[in-house]
Amino acid sequence: MKTIYQRLDEIIQRITKESFRENTGLGNEIGYYIFDYEPRYEMLVREHVHFLKQKINDGDYGFHIKEFDLYEIMLELLETKGYLEKNFKMEQVKGSEFVFNATKKTLRLTEKDDLIIQYIKDRVVKGDVVFITGVGKVWPVIRSHTVLNNLHQVLDEVPVIMFFPGVYDGLELVLFEEIKDDNYYRAFKLVDRY
Image (cartoon, rainbow, N blue to C red):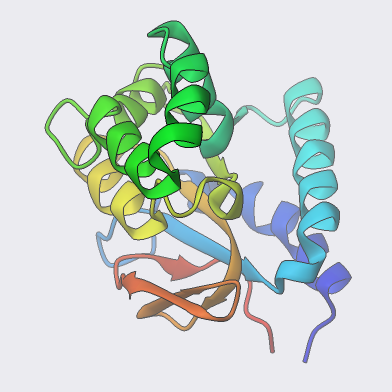
């Protein structure tokens, strides 16, 4: 079994290959990838994502990494709509589950005009490599398989890598190695654990 450090080191080797960024060699499948990791390595993975972004975006690699932290996007959208403070107050009165459901409706999750998906789509250009982070922070409001399914429909010219604190076996997403998110079979494992 590879260590987390070995696996993190393999990311740059993968994403800097031209064939990776052009989505070639995938049998015409769209380049969606999952980098799964043990949740205890969350801070290490965050630091490595920051390192990769800085190295690639400040270097001469011919592409840029665009990171989208789902939690930060959710907060920004709620703040922009004037709902963030209202949600805090509403949670005290009506509870967390009520706020989760209200937030899902506000963000139009799974709708044609899903605000999270639109936010990402509007900020990506051909030639980028997309990193999706914040999966654990935003659960249970936003589910990883929902983001992947909906993003898959609108973003198909750039590779997308979701950093997933849990296990992905090529079919099933298990968040925090405990919570079965849902089946998702369109993504490839970015770096195998073995």
